[in-house]
View 1 (cartoon, rainbow over the protein chains, first blue to last red):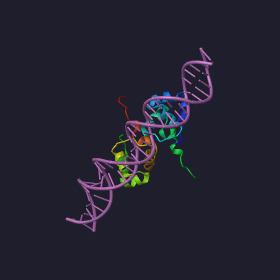
View 2: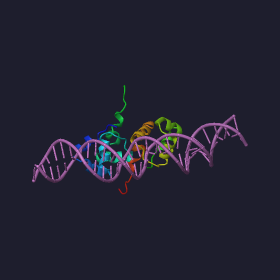
View 3: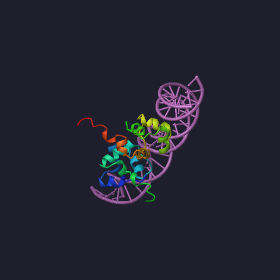
View 4: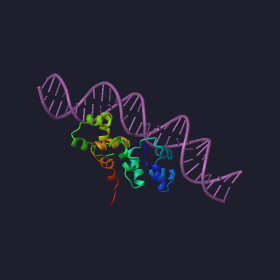
Length: 70
Length: 70
DNA sequence: CAACAATGTCAAGCAAACTTTACATGAATA
DNA sequence: TATTCATGTAAAGTTTGCTTGACATTGTTG
């Protein structure tokens, strides 16, 4: 689950703790997500995407996966 | 978690079992999702959205929630 | 009627998301 | 140096997404 979470968080100048508070999860969860450790639920993904004013697909790079060949 | 899953599945003429097979989950999971019982992971949500050629946000009505007043 | 396909329900169990706590590290700064 | 802030790690525990299996219901069709 690679994603743009860390990039976007740093770009907006938020700490992990602040971001966690904004979307209502623990800081651990933010750390794990940034490290790509798992697959969030769509409600959490959506909350995060909204913080950065982007779509779930963009934040979590869903359209970029598995292009394999073209 | 209201969503357009059932509507889209019926519109495309798939059975619950066929849809489950396509996205790699059990039929029970499709039933529960159609009933709005839970909050799928983004990878499952994305697989489902792709079956119907739409975005996660549209399939799961994420932008429509909580408008409260306008 | 019998048989089958599609949907639904219930319940037990497993796996993964998410929490909580505690501690460690490096950078910045008084 | 000592303190504080942001990040990281590790482990144990809770919650919930998801599976499996068994059975019931309704509609259709031979």
